[in-house]
Amino acid sequence: MGYVYTLVIVSVIGFVCYKMFKRKSAPSNRFTPFDDITMGNKSDVKRDEPIQDTKHRVEYEERKDSK
Image (tube, rainbow, N blue to C red; front, side, top):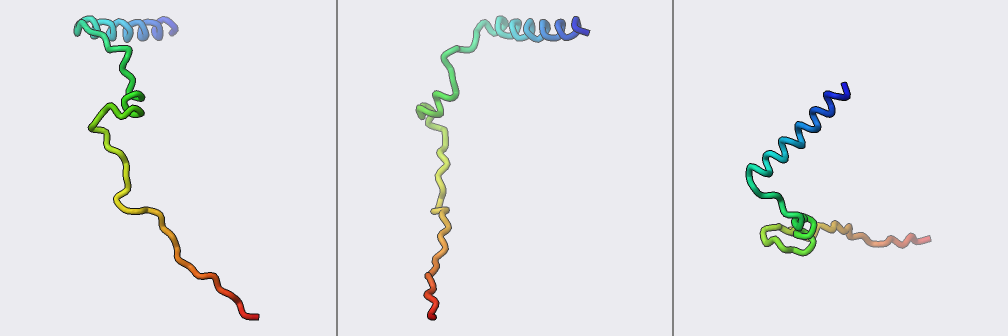
């Protein structure tokens, strides 16, 4: 059973390597989506801004009990 798992893992690694060499390019190691988000490099990233003020404040008056 261990041979089956090993064969599957080796097959997946081989398939990935084949696809990379077939394109003749490897993905850049410098690309990190985290940098694009935090530095604001992408202009098409939409910021979540509320349309209206979403703070619901309940107006109340303190009652003074007359004793």
